[in-house]
Amino acid sequence: MGTCNHKWSMVNIRSGYLIVEGCYKCKARASFFSTEAVPPIANYQDGEHYWKHLGSSQAVKFDLACDYCGEVVNLDDMMGLMLSTCRDPECEVAQLASEEGEGTWIYVALCADSSHASGRCVSDDGIRALTEYFNANIKDPRKKVIVVPCIKCKSIDTCEGIVIADTGLTDFY
Amino acid sequence: MRVSEIAEKAGLDSLNKYKDKEVEGVYISDMVSDIITGAKSNGILVTLQTHKSVIAAANLVDVAAIVFARGKKPADDVVGLAEKAGIGLFVTDLDTWSFAMKLAELGLK
Image 1 (cartoon, each protein chain N blue to C red):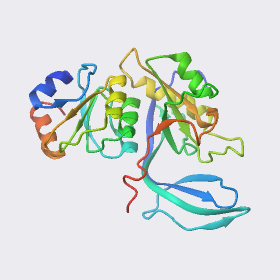
Image 2 (image 1 turned 90 degrees about the horizontal axis):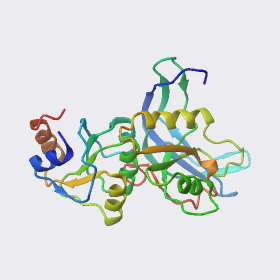
Image 3 (image 1 turned 30 degrees about the vertical axis):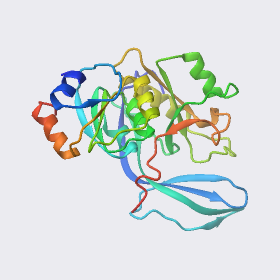
Image 4 (image 1 turned 180 degrees about the vertical axis):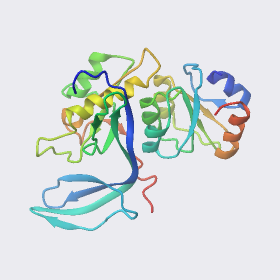
C-alpha cells in the first residue's frame, strides 16, 4: 500500500441483492452479489457442483478509495460483515477478542466461499483498509474496531456472531 | 446538543445507560447494510428495526443513539448489547417522519 497515510472513503456504493446458493451434492455454500432488478434464483450445474438457490436479501456493497493517493481497494470479495461474539477458546478470532479486551470490537469480513476450499478469503489489502476506514471514523478514543477475514474463524458455520445482513427482512422484491 | 438533551426535549423513553455524546447528525434507515454506508459517527439513527444486527451495524460506525419509531421496543439482549457499546436506545410513539420533523425543529440536520 506504499507510504501514503491513507484517508479512506467509501466509493462505488451500490445496491443489489446478496444471493446465497448451496450445492446439494457436496453441501458447499457460495454467495454472490447481484445488481439485477430481480435477483436470480435459477438452479444450475457448474462443473461438479449443482447449485440450488437458498435465499437472497437486499444488500449494499462498496469499495474504499484513498482521498490522498487515489488508491482504490476493491471489496468485491467481501459479502458481508459479522460482529464476532465467539468465545470458543480454540477459535483464533475469539482469542483475539480475549487478548484485546473491552473496548475492542472484532468484525469478521465474510467471503463468498465459507468452505475456503480454494484457500482464498477477503484480501489482506481489503482487511487492512476496512480496519483503517472504520477506526478513522470512530470518535470515541476508548473504542477500536478490528476487521479479520472469515478464514480466521475456527468454523464460520459454527462461529457465533451477529451478521450485518438484511436476510429475512428485506428479501422480498 | 447532547443525547440526553435531545431525549428530554423530544420526550423520548430511554431503555438503557449510554455515553452522553454530542450529537452530530441524523440518519434514517431500516436496512442494516445501508446503515454502514450512510450513518455517521456520533449521529442518531432512527429506525423501525429492533434486532441485534442494527446494534452491530450502528456500533461499527460509532452511532451515538438509536431511536425506535412507532413504539417498537427491542428484546433485552439487544438492549444489553447496545449498553455494552455505549449506544443509547430510545423509543418514540411517533412515526419516523413525525419524529424526523421533531428533530429538525430541535435544530438537528
